Image (cartoon, rainbow, N blue to C red; front, side, top):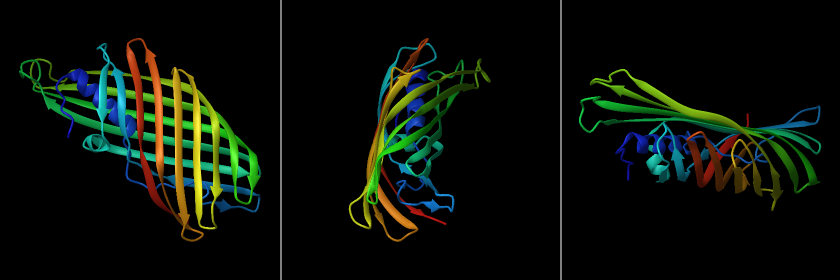
Length: 262
């Protein structure tokens, strides 16, 4: 059911979390699904993906008490303006450099209860999450590889409430925060057959947040050298609190897609 924004605090919490966990419809791939081989020995992978995630957790902002939110992907989709997700990786022998970027923007508006101070309240929320890491293969053969990885994830959250009409027409207020977490774990792929492969990762850490974790598991099928399809499941959790701002949420849902190398 489409979320109902009964108060400014509930609106901010729902849309802020929705932003963190919605995404533009794109294509999901495994790092082994598409590689560009170069004469230098480097291989490159670029993977835009679609993640149909719902979320649950607690958010506190604008000096208000934390609000618990439990939204399905359908609830989030109703408020999504724009989203983009992509993973990239460069490999040389046993060494790798990789990144993961998530950006979303959501908005919504609601008529105020009495219309004296304002006729309508509009909320815009943007969330950016960017991970940059390096890895080393402790296991590496023709069937696949298992990497020990480490890196840093940057989170940036910004929410703005604007009032229209009434005595407070044109007034607005923003709240948000930016922080960095160090994360580490394992990432790998394994070919079951020449066409069927498994891929996944598990990361955990903290820093600005008390805890920051990310796990995923996928199964893929190589149709040919340039086209693969994958399906799997991903979950991300983060628990950040600072000066009345709270972002303690878990996002999880299926990932799927198709990639064409060109």
